[in-house]
Length: 102
Image (cartoon, rainbow, N blue to C red; front, side):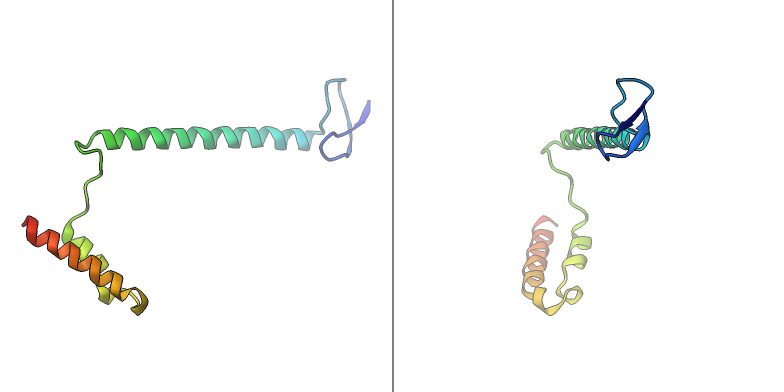
């Protein structure tokens, strides 16, 4: 029997009363379901892994990179003038941490 697809309105040959979508629309719907399920699973896996990683540290926080590396990244010479004041403050604070902890 020939039927109009409920999604796109195009005519298709239905092999039974239960068929409401053409092949292309049915496939697109199924692909969307799989994509949504995969995204949800990936999100859940990432959330779980993040929680597990955080619980491995005694204080629940990730360790900071080496202070010298942070100072190098934040140094005002590495930033445009509009961020110069912020870079200077952050660099000074990191140097204070380094000198206080060393």
